Image 1: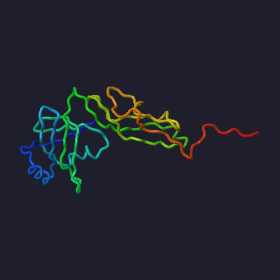
Image 2: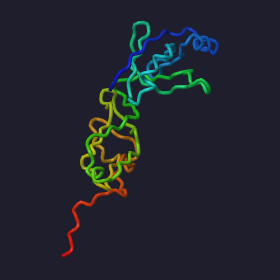
Image 3: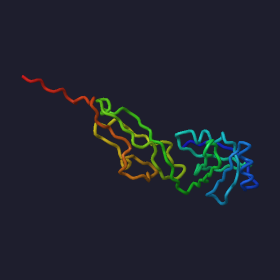
Image 4: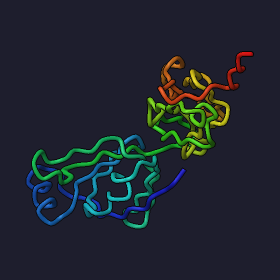
Length: 192
């Protein structure tokens, strides 16, 4: 799993007035919870760019006063008009507690059904995965090399290793649909 580093400064005051002053200075008030105690801090808004503007799931390593916390982004609030980040909640990870994250689905290979004129329909872009932090996959790779026209891949058929998928097993991930341009498997025999 990819890890993004972020540094911040602990917050002494946690009221609305303090949060407003931080936002005016280009900082985002944040909180880390899930550990022994809640930790309030602030960080520059641009430190969220590699996290928010990426399709990848990632861990966030927050450094505060020389101490590091491994976290995930739990919730983020945006301004209604300017889309600037108002507040972020981070969840501290523990090596022995499983977490659930949406993991991107990546496709590899060429489908024989698509080569014959079928259309690949991708139904979902992410799948919810439950795993210990050390076993969390970066992506879920779907092999298309066996998909003929009319075939589909469901969530329940995805191979899992040290993790479980919590989405409905009957949910379709992708399918090869027929189109007008479908080429027949064998040429028709000529009439004698």
